[in-house]
Length: 394
Image (cartoon, rainbow, N blue to C red; front, side):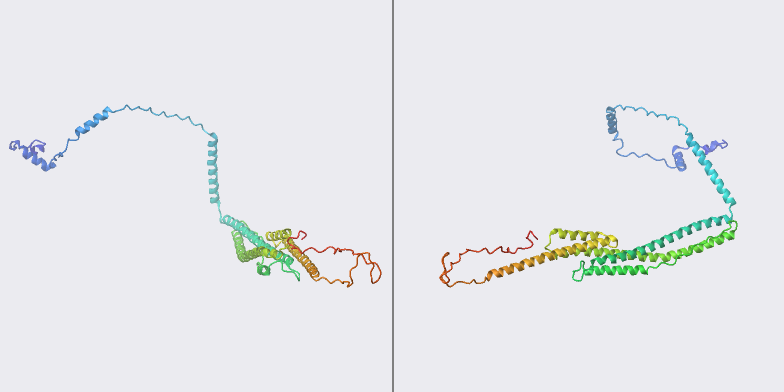
């Protein structure tokens, strides 16, 4: 059928002039409207995998295993929840409290006035000022206490060190360099404390009467509080460097004490080596006294007792060493005297006449001859000198 017949919907055209077109012409016109028809392309190896797929299906069917169907999980029904009336009441009260607070806030905002705001600001500034003045007072009191305590410690240490002053003929108990360094540290510490001067204290603040209904009165009170705060800040700025100087002086003084303690302990072996003869008990007493000095605060009354005990123990050790040396010298002197007497004996007189027998008369005098008394006893002799280190009596 030609296109003229297709679109002749009202059938008014003369069909006599129409001719039956052939199939080739109709196909060409259809291709011109909808496009050329696509032709399916078959690949060269199409259909070759069909036997293999059929074999796989048969194999799977032969090896099939029945699958157990699990029952559907039973959903546990939850028990109906009980209403917690306490929670409900608490929630209701919270809602009421929030509503009341919001209402009060709204009322305060609506009824606020400049005087009320100024009073709130004045109260806040006065609280800050009171805190600042309290901090200033505490800092001043602390620095004053540190200065006073430091001066007392320095004076006490100087008095305690007097216990180590030797007599005119005594050897120093402590190294001269260590003692001089500590004395210089004490003098420097005292000078630093004397130079730490605090500023004058602020006058007592007088209360200011304020009319809470007058904005001008409240503003004047705010100005007074601000001026006082400026004075407190300036005073605090002057106190800070004084406090830092006192703390630095304390640290330097403590370091000097530690250095002296180290030098004191290192000088003990020389003191013990200078007295090698006394027994160990004397040496142990000196060592115990030295350890007590190192462990005690020399700026306290206990330090004076520790230094005095060390001085006395050293004096006792030296006295024992001197006693042993004197005793050894006396023994050596006696031994030298005895040895010299035994090496040079005095000659005895001899009679030139012939000896006579006992009982016979002396031809010269006619008297009987004296009887020979035999050998005489020379008496006790001094023992050989012994080493005092091995002598039990020593």
